[in-house]
Length: 190
Image 1 (cartoon, helix red, strand yellow):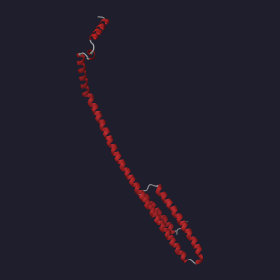
Image 2 (spheres, rainbow, N blue to C red; image 1 turned 90 degrees about the vertical axis):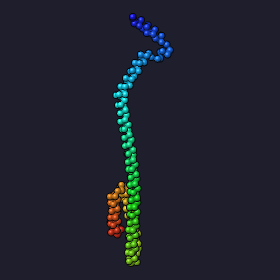
Image 3 (cartoon, rainbow, N blue to C red; image 1 turned 135 degrees about the vertical axis):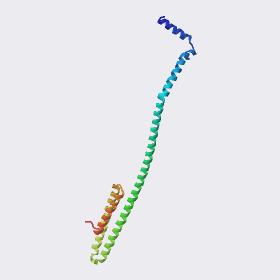
Image 4 (tube, one colour; image 1 turned 180 degrees about the vertical axis):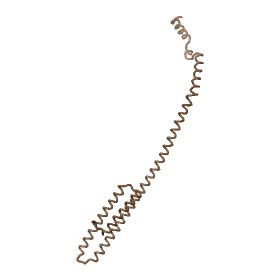
């Protein structure tokens, strides 16, 4: 048989099939298709699917671990933020306390200097009254300038540094030394 004869035979066989026969495969093809499917499914089920499931399980575990780590980090960050806010509030309260103490001490020093000046003024002769009054006014002005300068310096120190216990103690000690020096000089700057 020639090629054309074989080709004609195939065309004749296809012409015999019509309608639904064209859609439904032959029984032999259907059986071989089912057998091939079962073999491929068995091989995939035996080798590929367990590995795929294992990879999916590992990935799921990694994702779950990452989610737990992220939640722990978020909780830790929130705790650190709360602690930072508390420390900032404590630092502000401490700064306000130091400023108030400084103001009270400066006011006491000012009162002491004024009291001393008034006591000295009572003991001086009447003809020196004008000179004493001028000296007293100058002392009050210098004291106010010194208090203003010290308050500004203290505020700069408080704002310019992070307040921790050591820094706070150092600021208070420096201020006390300044006030002591000012008191021992009689309120006059050299």
